[in-house]
Length: 269
Image (cartoon, rainbow, N blue to C red):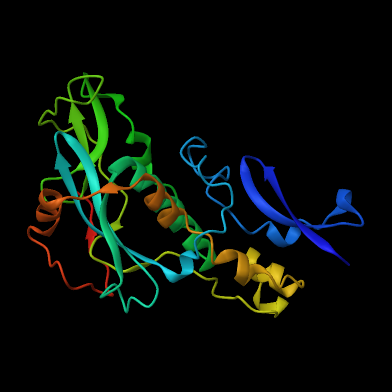
């Protein structure tokens, strides 16, 4: 049966599905149901993920990403990160560049990626309350009004900061009872794509794993499609800005610039 590829949108998520030229109205879309691209309904912000239309231009399974540090420049907060290409040997070579990304945008992408990673490992990542403060948000604490926004701590990690103005430009030293709950790993070589623990054709081992269940029911295309899917790395690549000499100096201060650990180092602010 001759087949063609058709781009369709389901609940805001763009997916590429195989459609039968003989019966387009009943094309089998199930084998792509597990391909949760970066525009899906669980991504917190449809506008943020609007760039991702199911592109097949980058094989993200060849890439790795390492977040270096959370830095403040001109009163704006950024995550400094590095992207590494194929055969990078644990982020030790093949560096594509050093970049910055708004801390809120990076946090959105990081949490979205972790939700997918945990799902494929048969676990639940849960919710990250800190994402409620990606934008400047009015809060009340002990009878006083403040504005809160996710940003960088003085140690280079994540922290929910307090401000006196609605634009979050004037930071104040105040306890507002809010704490960062995103355990972002710094100086850790992250895979851009995580694979299911049960990626085989054995239905008995696929229970609870959507991707493996599809494989067990005859979907042989998962491995091909999934290599293009990375919420974190695709967003980082799209929203990145260059990190100049001064930026790199800030990122390297107090950290190792040449070594990456396989054990995670968490910063909670």
